[in-house]
Image 1 (spheres, helix red, strand yellow):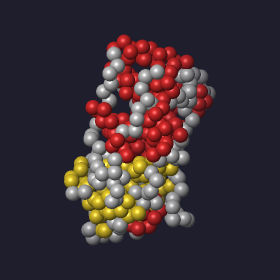
Image 2: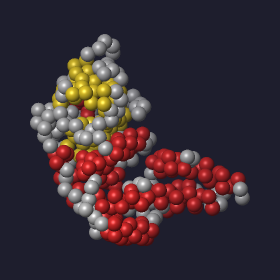
Image 3: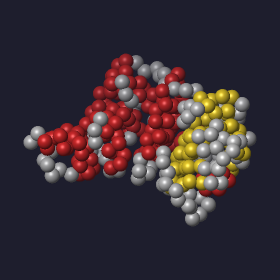
Image 4: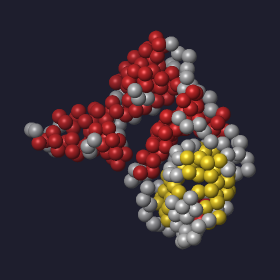
Length: 319
C-alpha cells in the first residue's frame, strides 16, 4: 500500500481515499474510530491509510511509522476486525504474530502495543448484513464474530490466510473497486475464517458431494459469462457452503469461487489467443463478466503469469 498524500476536506473520509496524517487523533476522527494512541518512541509521527467503503462494510489499510500504545473502541453499530500484517503485536497482554484476526468488539474496547513500522488491515461489517449473507450460504453467523469478550483472537486457518490475501489485493487495486459482489465474497471469507479449519467439517456423503459438483459445474457453464455468486451456486445445488467448498477442494484443490473465477479468466485467455490483431481486451473481459480492468488484469496475471495484453501480443505474433 503506497498512499498518495491528500488532505481531507471533512473529518470523515470518503471512499476510496489515500491519506497521510501527521497527528494520530486526526487519523482517528477521519476513520470514525474513538482512539487514544500514546506514542512510545521518538520521531515525527506519520500514519498512512487507505479506506474503501461499500454499502455494508468498510476496509482500511494503514501503516504507523511510530510505536504506539493503542487504546480505544471501534465504530458503533458494526462488527470490526483487525489483521496485523507484520511483526508481533501485544494484544491485551498476549503476543500475537501476524497474520491473525483480532476482534475489536470487546465491551471495554481494545488495548494493544504496536512497534514502529507496524501495518495492518481492519474490516468492519454491519451485523444485519452479515446475518443475511450467512443465511444465503446455509450457515448461521459464527459465534466468534459476535463475541464481545475482550482481546478475542480467531484461531489461525487456511481461510483466515485467504481472507488476508483478498483484503490485501482489494486495497492494492488502483480504482478502489468495492461493489456488493465483492462485499458478499468478503463476508463469506470472514465467516469461513471464523469457522476455522475444524468448522468446515460437514456430514455430507461422497455421493452428495459428487452430485453437488455436477450441478455446480453445469450451472457455472450455463452462466459462464456472468459474475455469479457462490451463494447462487449453493441455492442451485441445494447444499450449504461448507459442503460445496469441501466438494470443490476435494476434486479440484480450490474452492468454488476460485474455480469460477479461473474458468472465466480461462475463457478470456482462449478468446485472446484466437482473436484478431485489432481485438479489444476490454470487450472480451466484459463478455466474460469482468468490468473493472485493474482488478481483472491483476487476477489474470496472477493466474497465467502474464498480462492480457501480452497474451494478445503473443497470439498476433504467430498469425
